[in-house]
Image (cartoon, rainbow, N blue to C red):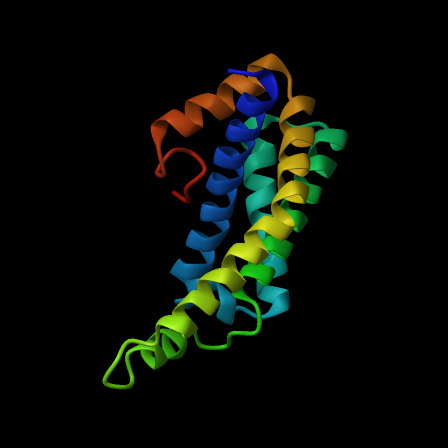
Amino acid sequence: MKTWIKRSLYSLVGASIVLGGLSACGHNRHGHGSSMSAEDQAQMRGKIVERVSSKLDLNAEQKQRLNVLADKLQEQRAALVGKTTNPRADMQALVAGDKFDRSRAQTLVAEKTAAITGKSPEVIAAMADFYDSLTPAQQTKVREAMQKGRHGWWHRG
């Protein structure tokens, strides 16, 4: 497998873990991460950055790259959520009539896909920049945390 493909896959997996951590923290505290105020989101993001920084013993440059990654992930998440204030209502609207609204469902999928596709290059670049700035020992810690699964040291507790 080509190096750039491997890096892209690792970046996407790593970004998914970080995004999952952001979402899980937001979900556990407020029910839905999207309902958090901007101040709450910034506070939660700061806690996550500090936790990862502490676990990996990051230097100032690495921490700055982690902050850029967190910013890009937050931007992608905001783009994915989009203008929707109530995703449940959007889903309920698909089955509100006697027929499933296929065209609206396809539109929703297209909107979400466009949001992911549009922001992914920035997220991948930020993840790659962060990961590549890590020492081999720090990279090993990241891989080990990923092997532990969702409830590794990325998770609260």
